[in-house]
Image (cartoon, rainbow, N blue to C red; front, side):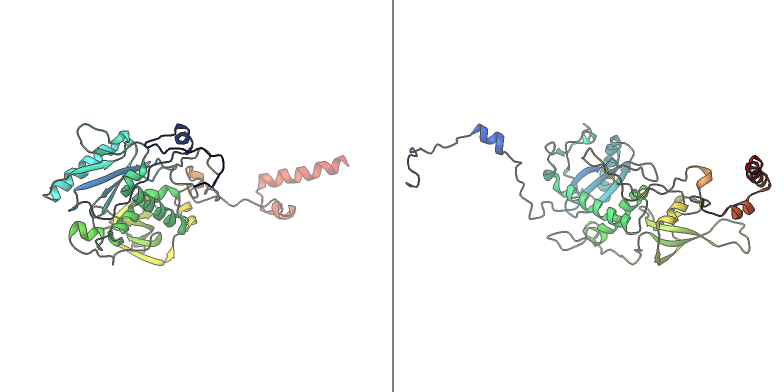
Length: 344
């Protein structure tokens, strides 16, 4: 072109690879998003991934979440595990259940290159190690999961030890309200062939009242227990409720809701929880920051089950403190006042 003087004429060589340029400029390969449905019926292809470990154990002592997503309908299943090696058992049971529900064959199972999925008895496809974009279906579902859980926990400052209940509730709702791209139907309708009903949904974390069914109740005894709504039962038409008095999760259909009165952190503190304000899942960063909100007082000891006891202020007048003290303390108080006067 003659734009620069003194530049020698170079001939273009094909397939020329500059090694220093590769070392200095190489980036990850791009992955083109799929713009169509690649499967023809639900259950043909399943995407699998795990989330965790959590920084706080759940109420039932679980640390990991196994997420399974159907490729055709985007219907999701979640299973909670204490150890990662439990994943194969949950996947095997799910595959057998889907085979019993549908007469169509399952073509493949797709997951990352994690060791918890490698088992010779279950043949499925693996992605390249450390390449999450290849497993984008379940990775995006995991992001949706964590964002929903974080929002639901933060709304009423729910203690973090209830994260498993929130995960279960989030996926229960997502299967019934999210539409499958390119098909315009919910995941529930694509899997079961009928439209979902949402009239039974309630506000997460609201106060509720559970009917007492124990026999020999007193005439003037309360007929219900105070509780906090946590979610929906997976295998029955029931709600999952945290009973404040018994400090346990129960499944029942005999429940009345007060959605105008959401649960607050003091209610969980009274029920014996001390994990509010802790991050949910482990981050890749080595340095963890201190939570902005101080944890609630621990209720593991029997002396602190009702929350911290009020302490007497040190600025009370001496006369008032003297009147409130017992006989033994009164005598000691008088002695401590008389001795200096004798010395004088």
